[in-house]
Length: 400
Ligand SMILES: *Cc1c(COP(=O)(O)O)cnc(C)c1O
Image (cartoon, rainbow, N blue to C red; front, side, top):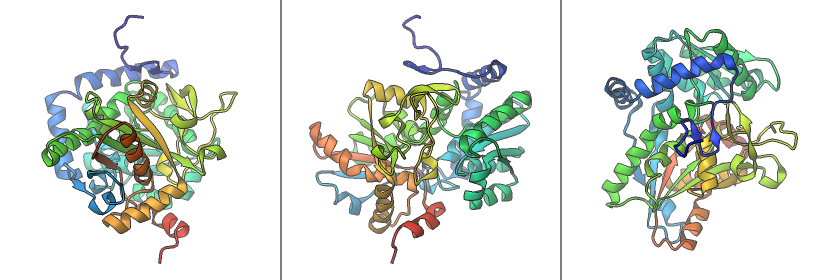
């Protein structure tokens, strides 16, 4: 093996662990990733959609009332992905991939979804770009996520309930893969996070990097300097890698990813893959995964459906092992408390996923202090809004 960076690998992580039948499709996508995505025509069209349809650039705003509860922190800045059309960062990726599919001449989009957020983002992109959309979803999730199923159907997507296995996300992924293998000439598979076989982790990162690029420019405008830390929640890792990407080459900027500790790491009921998982292969790439001694995937748990995933994108695995990024975790209860706290101090109802990043802020401030960083400026990725979580919030929190 040469010392050159192997395409599709992040150190020992990533790669393409798929059935032989999918290799030509991934190679076709890889060519499009190299030739179409960087082209001026694609970039101009995609950025015009981001501006006129998604509502970008999203603001980078101060959170002064929250900041005063973080001793020593000089600036707390929120990157407001919750203000995007459809209420989260996922639309950046979905719109980019569906546009790419169109340029590749594909006639049909498939996706898989757990909580339904990626399904809604993909259905939205397909509606506005005029392509038919089929979303695979575990039967159990179809029942649990009725509002998002209704949204997808209103947007014209066909929701296909998957009845195999545990009838959740991983079964939906298997079914989407099966569809893709069968219909590869006409069909584009839109993956929802920075995970999966090469080139998806790189493609999704590049599409979400708009979050980091804007944050970097906005922070320089606002403070005249870079932030000392960037903090984001990590499910598959797309909003985190998107904001991290713009700061990877700035060693003074500390990067913090926050995973879901569910009922607590010791309980075994969590989704903290980097904190408590081991190296393995899941959904086509090598990364950290939650599995038992026999390599069987363990069902993860998180109160936030978007973080409830037993894997993590391979670039995060590499950033974890190299120490370039630090991964923390927050429990369900800590996330719930953070939703209420941010709502009452800043007037922003954040998503339960996003709340994990906020719950970790006191620890981030402590770590920065221990590292000798004085009066830090911290940027937090507000990955999405919490309207979708209202029924969970009302059930779990005593809101008076
Ligand atoms: C889906 C989702 C996440 C988790 O996905 P990543 O790929 O890790 O970013 C985080 N926040 C919100 C609001 C989501 O909808």
